[in-house]
Amino acid sequence: MELNVKPRSSQEKLAEGMIPAVAYNKEKNVSFAMDRKAFDRAFRSLSTTGLWDITVEGGETFPALVKSVQMDKRKRAPIHVDFYMVTYGEPVEVSVPVHTTGRSQGEIQGGLVDTV
Image (cartoon, rainbow, N blue to C red; front, top):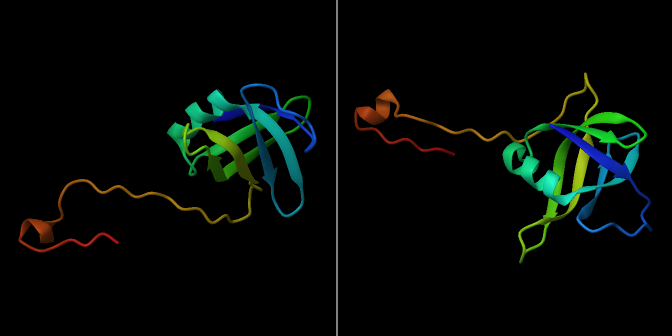
């Protein structure tokens, strides 16, 4: 998923409809602001397991994974996002959801299945 963002400093006031975000890894840290609605729509389909291509306006493009999202509890809308910059060729630990379908042979024959 591609995401276009605007660079920002920590003291800068955000425009209406924008949320602050930061992307980091071992070597660098990039602060930026992005459109809340665009991020929310994309996040609902990709969640934390999808790879994002973040393009900073007038600057660099880098791949990143969503590390954490702070949500407004009343409005259920994102208010801040942390991304982890991915370096191709280096291992990354992520949680991947597994969804099971159907029934196993042991379950069909009367056994119990315990999903952990």
